[in-house]
Image (cartoon, rainbow, N blue to C red; front, side, top):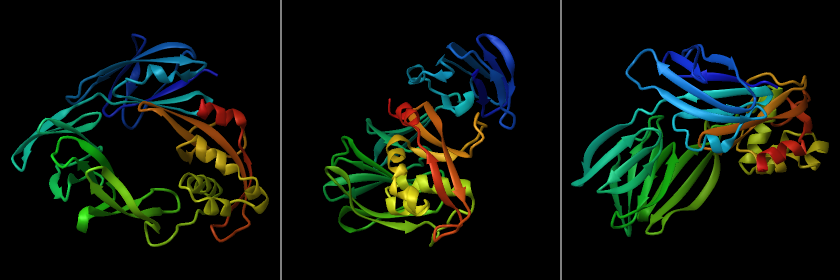
Length: 332
């Protein structure tokens, strides 16, 4: 099948493919273009507004799919390979900024680009995307940087006692210092049903260590799925979260005995709605596996659901197609 690229851009701009003008892409109207199933594809993005620079990258296709090694160092290019030949490509030219400040008299420089890094008195510290300026927390036998993230969360970067190295990084919706080097955290998993984790972490000279953990609900209680698709996704998410009992609760008793979700949990990172049509009439969801920082692949998981109702919603999955070829594609 001939692949089609879908080019997403942050600002309106021209897209050139293999040196030829292919069209204009905007945030509201991405460019769709068929491409050859094999060989090198040279992409160029030239913004038509703003002061952001352009971007030129190469990816190599084989059998209609990108070769992961061709994208390992493709800064500013992010690709999702969907079933049926759809290749979503985000073109985001790096636009690094540097902010200089001091912490307790120590010179610091925070660089924001494809990644966020902090130079603390010359020591590199990796921070999460959207990290704001931190404050320095002195602990018994350790130190840490505590700050906010752009999405309303918080981060904690553990440091050696003499600030000579980073020893850990923690990101959560809420992080609050407690006594004795402990930090209480709350993190919503962002899944269909609304799972969350309440944890306590210890920061010491060896880094960060989780000393207590329990399940919780992000909004006080579960939000059980009310469609067949959402039920299949919730089942896969429960398996990925290490909740086999809940995962089986979405399945018919006969199907639950076969433990079909155990293999899925080992082979993928995420389960999402299928975004583009696949050459199969059966309902399906997408299993996502990230191969490197710039490429993720999606494979279909076909299922059948019946509206029989239960304690975890009004749909129950009574059939799943877990093809060995699908799992092998992920595990190679």
